Length: 281
Image 1 (tube, rainbow, N blue to C red):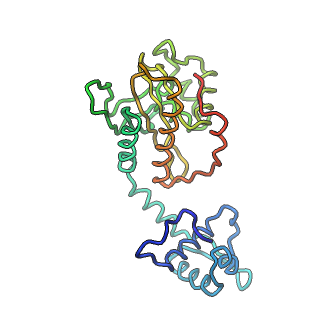
Image 2 (image 1 turned 90 degrees about the vertical axis):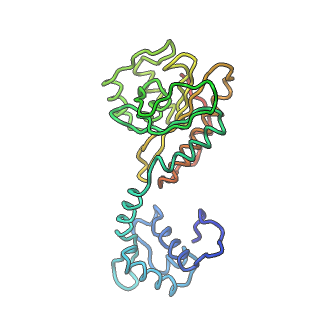
Image 3 (image 1 turned 30 degrees about the vertical axis):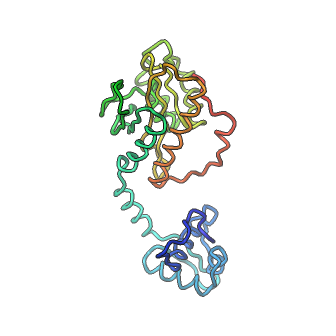
């Protein structure tokens, strides 16, 4: 088995380390819940049985692989040391550190201010932002709490939690009207959240403030739990409607880049967004 995500061999490529990584990937495959035999590992990684056995025993010594059974019935699985290393890796990753370069690129490519928010008590709290270097600036303040039902960040975060949890937030905080375009009917709003989850981004089309649009998308961690959301914000004046879908795709892609850096694995086939990339409000 060759890791399809692996880069081409660089100057200092170590084949034995690459083979060990391929073995771990083979054991991590969802279909291998019962483990693999030495022969199956060798076949999956395109290496000899003896090479596979040596690699497995070395990885086992470090707790990266575990085994059970005897002789021909011996099966190999991922070791619990990987869980410890995963916890360490998670603690060393800073959401802001990972997201900030992506925010800069998002602002450059869209011409709009970009922000990063984390969930807190049903709301979105802005923890980082990249503004445009121009005369007209929007009032986007760090630490600001975004409403969950009428902002790009808030709706993006709410779309990424279980429906029952989203309904509880709606019941707790209500859907206060901010503009004539704010969704204030609970059933309509919960249906709107399903549309957001389907296409992967949320549109605030003058729902929080007149003349302002905001497009947000959720960010997921290695456990597929929503860790935050990114958004772009700008003036609606002169912005054609067809640009919303284009900008939404850019925000969604930026959120996915951050998610992948956090260890998230996209297990969808892309069909959810293939049929329609538009959100009705």
